[in-house]
Length: 167
Image (cartoon, rainbow, N blue to C red; front, side, top):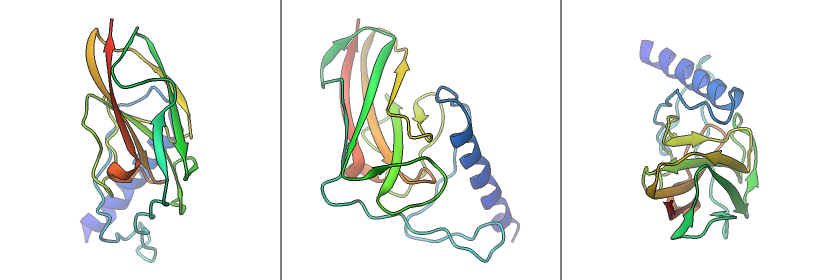
């Protein structure tokens, strides 16, 4: 029973941290939530909704970068999204979400898994559409990952990965 009380507290703290901080603050981590199950919230009378469906034709993309491009650091990155609404973190709404940037952290995060929040998993829960990052010289893999209002990944269906070479 104590575990059921602890999980909602962690989830609420994670949501507050993701939507309340600056876009460059990435010290916290989030818990993993399965898309196939529902979890009780703090008052135990409400359930967390399942992961919303990805609308047909929805996609995310890098607006100003191409795969294999050579760039200078710091690097401005512009996020693009089509076919699904851009919204702030917090509420789970059908056909909506927000961006996350994975830096050298894989091609996508499994659908239904909460995107971690650390130096390689950046959250943009205020519906930001761009950022500036500093990268070391060499090759880097950048993945744009879309997630729902509580940061659950939409998986590979709403992810885009490129490699860039930093001078």
